[in-house]
Image (cartoon, rainbow, N blue to C red):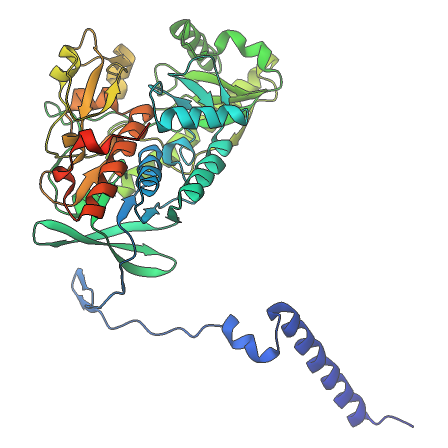
Length: 479
């Protein structure tokens, strides 16, 4: 039978519809009727008041999530430790972070080098579990190099095992008080604006973001000068033969560190570049992978997004210029290539939230001891020059402390003074400028996080405030 033009056209249309239906069913796993679930219809936002240079946001109600005993903001070393500790103590725990991984400066920041880690508890457990996967390098338990990607998956495993509910790609943007107590926080993410309530919150953001949003008092930088420590953008690189750079490496015991960095600095200058950091350092990581710490960004407040953006762009530009300059030298630098730059530039100093105790310079000098000690610090004062000019004269100074004695961080320094129901862990605990330059390293961040998580869990379970928890009782069973 002869097919007419109309018949042929109808056949083509039928075949086309059939193919679409087949593809729709294959993609959705169901009939084509389910297809509307793959599409969206934009709902116009409510009208805003645009008056001159001000935009008046419309009032709206947010769904309030109330399914946690402890909420931890910030999933860096302190936040992960706090969340794991709280969950292991029986608390329903939520952990929020703005990045796409756990670990903060350890992972998103490619720190790759750990200080003051010789402690009991989670520090020892993390080190042991890194060892089990061959991802920790060095002979000392107090300081060592680790592999950032292995650290990411390890922290995810530990949080999953403890039952921590993790939310990534989410930023805390507001806090709401109920009288003198922190009642809820607000986040923004691809899921929109959401509100979260819990009996106890822990600020482990490093920069004290939640505490500041909740109305806590805080300090930043050196009170005498207003200056703060610089930022650093670490990178991972590969070299053709790491053995040829051995004399430039800062090893895990830091013996020969000063001589090594002087040789690195001479090589960078031989490439025609004067590095912004006066002690450019290379750490061997694994095989032919190395960490390059060559950069300083001065005069940047970590809570200023424009300044942080500009610093990050400058830093990446400088690091690549140094890498290309060294590679042009040839010889042992032949084949040098950056393989990873961090998601976030490294921040040494942010807000220090006012607590019920302020760790001070005198604590370091006298080796202070406290009945409610959550961590013992053994790291000395490490203040990086605040300006490029000062960096040229003295890259690192000790804040007038000739010798730091091991000292305690008390629980009171982890409890906010101005707002109840809020604790801090990591860099943003309560301390002065000089003391912060000692306790800020990540071994102490883990220890303060572990203590804060334990106390937060007990407070939530008993219906009391963190400052009403007896530390002697809380620390039982921690290690």
